[in-house]
Image 1 (cartoon, helix red, strand yellow):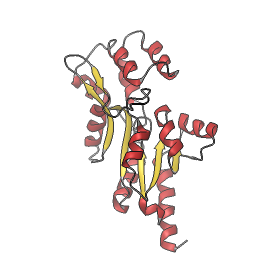
Image 2 (tube, one colour; image 1 turned 90 degrees about the vertical axis):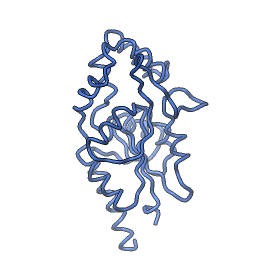
Image 3 (cartoon, one colour; image 1 turned 135 degrees about the vertical axis):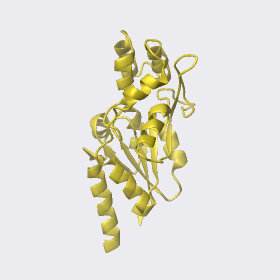
Image 4 (cartoon, rainbow, N blue to C red; image 1 turned 30 degrees about the vertical axis):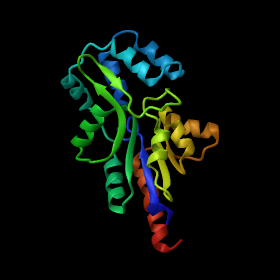
Length: 221
């Protein structure tokens, strides 16, 4: 019965969509110096908030339409729509936890006709580019969105947490989740810390596993 009580917490950039949309925006719109800022962030010497604010100062546009044109190139993981439909059919809550920005997550979900709850940083366009971090942790400022705190807050008693992700901001929640599907840096991290994780290439892989859970339950195994 544990599968029926599962709640899926899913990263967005590099997981639901195949590219990191923050990186797409930065690589296209930011001038010289962004790589050095990003390296500081990767070494955990800058928080997401400070990294974003420094990088935004290098952008050559704060026009929302320019952002939409770039974001519109995003490609969803080929299995995600089927996975989302399966979760809805089976009653599995699916919650997006992202250290990216609400602007493009909302835009892309609407484009695909998806109505999913999400938690992300707030992108502001005027009077200049800026970011707000309503879901940051009071104890740690490394990420703009503390996915671990959100997962623990949103996880209902008696439910099983299933985490799906690929990157650095997924490390903390993945370490505490009951079940992990991982790829890229997250999978490597799980191996390094001894956290069991199932490697996936696309959401089709995850869907096959979840469907197997359902068959086991129906067969009483």
